[in-house]
Length: 404
Image 1 (cartoon, rainbow, N blue to C red):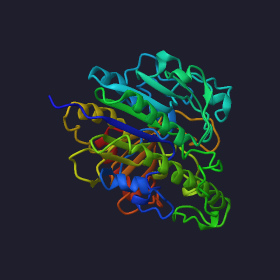
Image 2 (image 1 turned 90 degrees about the vertical axis):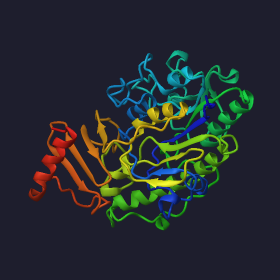
Image 3 (image 1 turned 90 degrees about the horizontal axis):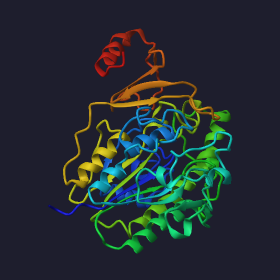
């Protein structure tokens, strides 16, 4: 049998699909990702199954959408016995390792989600998703000087590591690979919090542009606080994107041309689009994510199929077996199974389905909330859910995808 390929997932947080140079964003300075995109399949319509961190991460690791994977609410932990992609690849003879943001561990709701206390929360050895090597942190959003703990001898307890978080985590992966050498196939996840807020945190020496220089999308309302806030946020956001792109570039020295490399994000951020901020919303800025897959021998191309991050675990198993992944389904399901009681997040439970042409979103009681014609209106400027002329189309679409 042909030797199994080395596989690397690079997972970021709050990185919108459109916020990359290769995607045409004039604000996005991402030369390393642009180079990766030039060698990859760019799944340009990829979505997260749940545009909020714990639910999305649980789905990514297990290949099972929330709440079926055991994570429904923000403070739910991935069950200790949950089967993940790490278990599957270990059975195939892979060395497995995880570096960085975990995000599905047990947390005390009384502890502030931002800061050192959250960053020092311990993920016990038996609750690390089956990864043999694990060097990371539960959360805390310390984009500089993170606290790490895990299986490495120097991380027996939470330890502060100086530096920009993306650089620190990338270097931990590189160090692990240097120590490990070439002994069998490797599957690793490098998980980064950037470009998650605080957007005004230092970004490894990258100087944010002036807010007035940020080019805003047409769906950000002009002339009020939404525009001013969006400009302030995006100035820092794009600085962290540039800094993290540099860190991702350093991974290329380890993940050579014979590796399968995946780049994605667990969700996006509204950044003032439609006057909204943060995530959990079903709009494109929150739910659509970058997804690049570089596979040796597979030509670079753009794929506009309906793809979800929940598919990635199954794809990875297929790659490890030398088989092509299952073809994409005709649509991708999206949902928010709970309301997260944090500032500016989505205010309701919803479920929906998206194709590259249409998006239908229902309220918890099954009534239509949003219906967009993405072909005619990619910025979702007009909600057609209440349009009498679209009732038949909406009803047919609901029946077609089982949202009845």
